[in-house]
Amino acid sequence: MKTIIKISFKNLKQNYLEVQQLLEEKSGEKNICIKSKIANDLSLVGDDNYYLLDSFITKYNLDFSNFNYAEHFESEGELTMSIWSILSVFFIPLFILKGILSYVIYLYSKKYSDKIDSFNFFLREYKSDRIDLTMGDLITSKIKGKFLLRENVKFVFD
Image 1 (tube, one colour):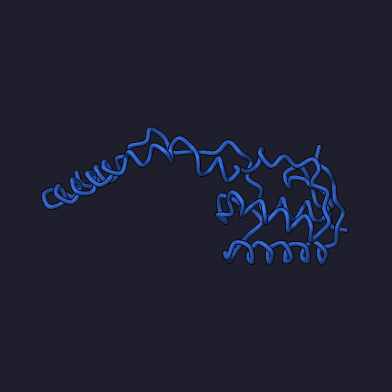
Image 2: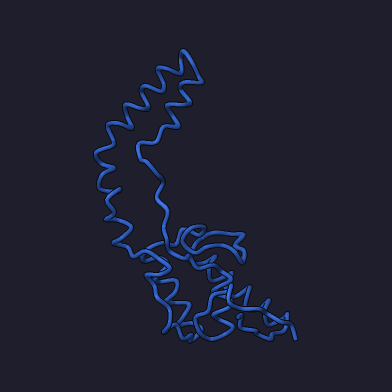
């Protein structure tokens, strides 16, 4: 069941603009919308999203006691010490060889050169299982005064 929050349009718009401005300042991105994801879209990862949340919580005096950081974001150590970042050093000669081979084959056939370019040494792309927070989640939390995901709330204009 969704939590119902009664709010005026003016108040909702004011909160939207405040959170949008904060995210623009911290990320350097423009055109941030309600569905913009903190880590994925705004590239605020590791310490960057930690400091963003810390300043957001402090600025608006919010209760984030039920917020589990590890459920939503990866720590700086997880980002830099993954097995793929270590193994990627060993793949550098293969990437160089792939580039040279692609260039040589391009002289004879663009079709086969494109196939070489699209070849991926990694079996699958890395996908995080974390639930990235959105601008909408931050707006909802600011309005409610405590951590709350946007998907669990229904706003009703009064």
